[in-house]
Amino acid sequence: MEKKKIHILLVEDDVFLAGIYQKKFEMEGFKVSQAENGEKGLLEAKKKKPDAILLDILLPKLDGFVVLERLKADPATKDIPVILLTNLGQKDDVEKGLQQGAADYLIKAHFKPSEVVAKVRSAMKAAKNGKR
Image (cartoon, rainbow, N blue to C red; front, top):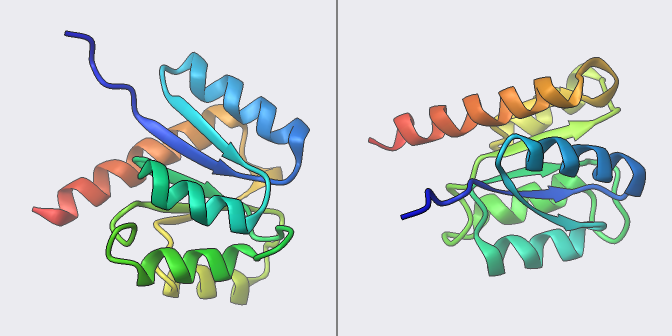
């Protein structure tokens, strides 16, 4: 029996960047779904129940903080680890994201796609260990 691929939902409005991340995650053996705005990201998360969500903050329709808040308020999605992926590096943005329940916070300019993959793996491991 084939091992089930880890499913990542990527909520990112920059099509070029989303493509780079998708390619990198697929090369690492992940299954990737994409949503280009906050509204769609929320719907996809509820419908597909991914193993982890990479969430941009500056998004059309609903920003990442609103999406994160709604994901964490919904019993169906509250346990999915969410990693914020953004260019907002302000300390209060970082703190706000982590207080709202984000597993981690990555500033796009500081991380290569391979490092993002590693962060997702460690956030999922932490989420799994925290549940026991």
